[in-house]
Image: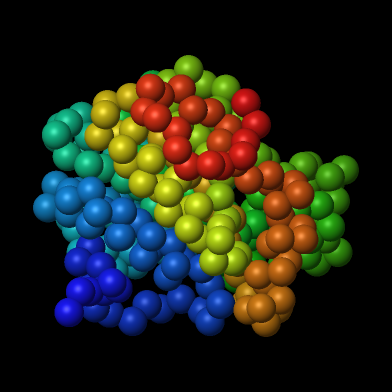
Length: 257
């Protein structure tokens, strides 16, 4: 009998703590499948951030390090420089990466640090109760913006992938989504390429994944998936933002520049 589907070795057999409809579980699996397919599980070191994914070290069956809030890129820099032969990745949410960790991610990309970042953007602070994040959309309600984000008061949402793509040290920057099966398949290909960029020593690679937060969006899971497609993707368009690597691009991901 041929096995066509199995549980990834790079995941531990534990139930996750995530809310119903949260996409962290899907994204965890995609990362784990890529690690298995590349055959690098024994050589991989992950860096867990602070946020809903703070317990990622319980779910990835690889060596893991916990970083202070926003400092995952700084920790990953140290780990990769001490162990240049290892595969290093950070797993961060938008509050962690785009708010308190803005300096760390920008300078890691500017330096061309050779690790991979999985950036989960659900447009809100999830773990701490639904506060407005740097990625919260205009008009989107949050506990700290109960009338919706007003650009005249709170400013405009930040497109992190577009910002990072301007930096010379960034080798591969892309944005994907997991709101339907087709996009999940594309997301996996992008994540695999981001790890391949690291293995080839090309420079910094980041995959931004548009995700859901039904609990803090006050939506049912199915409604949240539709909200990603209707509201997030128009502001955060999918596709490659930078591909400065000689690795052949066979992903079929439409993108900008």
